[in-house]
Amino acid sequence: MKWWQWIGPWPLRPLAIGLLTAVFAVATTSYSLTLATAPRNIGAAIAAGACGGGVLWLARRLAPRAVTTLAGYLAAVALAALAGNVVRLLTDTMLNFPNFSPLANVVATWARSILFVLIFLALLGASQRRLQAQVDRADEAVEALQKQAEALLAADEEVRRQVALVLHDRVQAGLIAACLRLRKGLRSDPPNSQEISDVLDQLEELRTLDVRHAVYALSPNLREVDLLTSLEELGRTYDPAMRAAFDVNVDVPNPLRLGVYRIVEQCLLNAAMHGGAQTTRVTIHEGAAGLTVTVADDGAGLPAVVAPGFGTTLIDTWCRVLGATWERQSRAGGVTVVVRIPDSSHM
Image (spheres, helix red, strand yellow):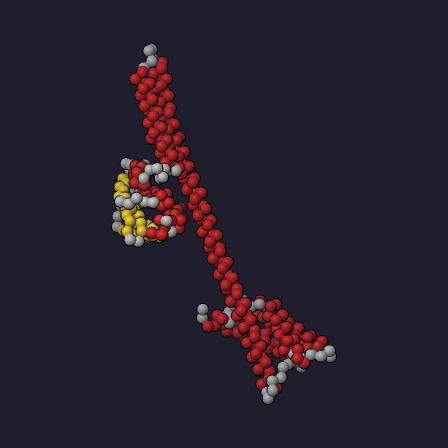
């Protein structure tokens, strides 16, 4: 914070300054208050506060931009203090400093009033600055949570869409074909046992292949199946358009498997959808600092300006859950994503 920001330019507070000036004016003359002088002194203090606050109000109203500059701000405060002291001078309630001439007494009182107003406004400004910073942080946190919620909802809908496509296109088509073949086999005389046996094989293939793919898309069984097998199953969904190779030389702990799986899943999706990659290589190894997950593709690379999207939001979210960091590097002929999970995340 620069030195002058301690005194401004904060937004002027006419009402607060007016009330405080009146209270301060009464307090500085309280030693001389009597039943006879109290009404005059209190009335003069109220008038001084009203005049000072009125000047600040007019300055904020008539010159809103000027009072946000240092010179304009100080000028407004000085005029407000002068107006208040003029009222006290006219009502003969001005403080008298010993050994000061009348002019020096007015200047000293005016300077003291300016200093008082600046200190009070600085306190108001500093408090407002801290409160605004807290509000901004809270707003950013709420916005981040909102984006994460939207991303997770979108991810859920995307998984459901993929499962629906598998069930509707592949499973339904296979079932229809199996039913037609079964009817044909049963209509023959005698029933064609070979045809019926082939239909049963086809139904078994649907059960073990397409339905399994649908279940894996919803929730990969990473507790009973090792991560490498699950990732290879994921990679086969992109064959033959994109070949995915996996190099996993570490047994990834159970608490980390789902997060690593989802991050790799998103990287493969981005490589195929946005990069048009033909091959990707996923490497997971363990070093002194923890786990490192690297996904490199041979796609088109990143555009000059990369806008944050659904994919990066998902990766950000999972990295926060895992306590990890990640970076994305664009190179000639592809993109490399590196995720680093520290040792503390293994617990």
